[in-house]
Length: 220
Image 1 (cartoon, one colour):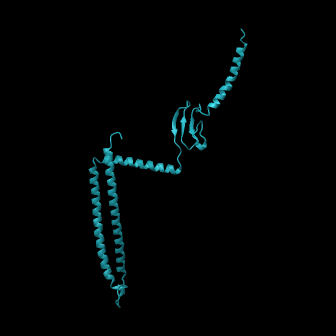
Image 2: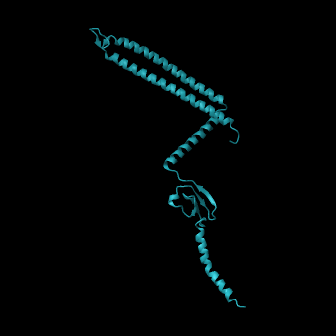
Image 3: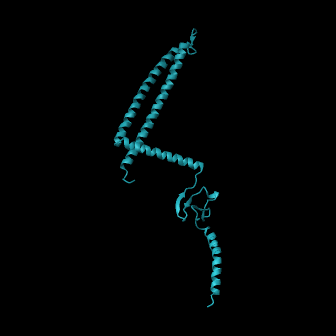
């Protein structure tokens, strides 16, 4: 039996195998992950999925996936945020951390909502007492100013008497000090009023939040 044609065909097949395998490998890298230790997958602006050992610079900031040597996704890499977006995200994370910390404070400090209400009322009553003292001081200040104004009428330029003298330095200084004291007392009262309003609002928020936390269904 003549085996020469069969042997020739086998030799040709073996010679062409590396070429064909190389072509298939080259073609496969366009649509499948690299078989190195690590590769990436990303989608371009046309919605086409790409694989490669490195991500082109123009796609480095967008969302992409990291693959292992078998092409299995290891993790997703989120797109890189701009400076403005990163700042917003950081502030949001900080606010969330503060909220969680305050929630923990509420749950470990109070046993029931009425505890918070009682503390609110005590703190507000304290401020009310301070405001009442401030109002009394303002009233006394106003009376002193009226007395000083009455004394000023005997001096120039408030008096038309021919023998009227200019306001004595000591009296002028008393007027200046009393007016300054009046302004400070009024400013202090305004601050107490603002503090009272803010304190009430904060306590009311805490009461509402505590009720929400303690009535929330288990598992949420």
